[in-house]
Length: 221
Image (tube, rainbow, N blue to C red):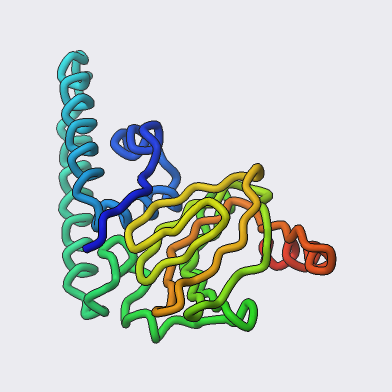
């Protein structure tokens, strides 16, 4: 496996450890962790710190009825998780995505975004963020754009480059409305990304910006 050069910021990892991230962002962190031993070690350290802090708290009394309900709920979650992991999916699908990609990537409902790009929406978060997979054909590119909301991306297969560098499998990228870029997939392989967008992209080209009202309407659907 090639060395991963781009990782989540410390604040994101701390929030992930605390369980306070929205589902959409947590999915991206989880997909990155499955490929990044460095961040797994960082998460273990954060979990240890959190555990030490929890031990310093005075526990609140709980009724036997509440305890029974909690343990019953935990048993149910364990059974559900086992069923999802045991489900036959493509071996290359991250475990955190198998609940959405049950029969492999090819069985998803892909929609063509442009001549070079296809997308498959997986879910919407409660905060309105869109969670989707993006495929860029080898050598294909996206139109130059910025973002009207934060964007989190994890490269699952292949790679791409933009004005800031070259990115490969496992890399975690964050973009906000101050970033303008033109992603271009590498020539030798299709690029597959997990992308979370908290607002629509904004085209910045002279002619492509005419499409921005349509893009904003489509994001809200």
